[in-house]
Length: 358
Ligand code: TTP
Ligand code: MG
Image (cartoon, rainbow, N blue to C red):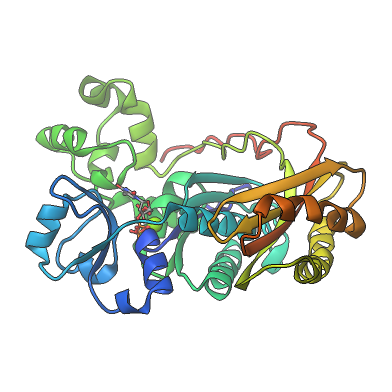
């Protein structure tokens, strides 16, 4: 049965995130098995690229084991500041499509696009557009899952990885979930999985054939949630605790710049774009504006002042103080921000929908 009030949730997850950033920035890493992590005798890997995965190399594996599986593996140290910068950028891309964003880590987030009007309100097209934006602006690929709830969206985003997406419409949820291995359910670690298996439960279909009472004897309080998940039900809203506090636009420059005149030109370029975005944010009171500079050593500074409107001259006026803090370092990023008055708490605005189990 199709549920007319079903939510539209997208789960976006970057592909081989840290490794892809290294391959993007260093061409010599592009066609070899690559991992990011420590390479000492006690180190573990944060992640690895898809070439390395062909050898069985995985996240959280020890560097020693990884080298045994793939002797030609190159292991590089991570650059967190760069990953954080990419993460901020993808979140800014998400915010073009909805205010309801629940980031899970640097490289993944849930988006509730039920009320979004972009792309004719199609969650499938919004996900495609977001992945396109990420590719055009950051030269990185992401995968997405589109579904009526967080649980299914998260599993779906893994289905067509890398650089793919998977739509599970409300009427397909039941079939999709039936074949699912219990290993794939968040919250079921290797130990719980083993225990469930020893009682004859391997897939969601096996759980469906049981009862909450019976499952309680095996997994205790987790039984209800497990039973619901096996039917594809997950009524959790996105955890979007606060309204957007600010609106920001920023640009990472192709080459570092060093003086005020060049910075002013960047501000003049960014300002109309900030106004465009501001036009889409309805009914918010501006209380602050600020300028952010990131220097070529990745340190950053923000200079702000109270303000009741977005004024280009105020950004320009704040610039000298920000520049002074750079003490001559090159500038790699310029950003403009507007701070909003904090009002109501946002929720996703959807009542929990109880589905009837068939
Ligand atoms: P994941 O999204 O789990 O992995 P991934 O993006 O590298 O690969 P996939 O294509 O399968 O999504 O994690 C995102 C980043 O978080 C990852 O690039 C590195 C970091 N990370 C760790 O530092 N330690 C870990 O154990 C894991 C799993 C990830
Ligand atoms: Mg990822």
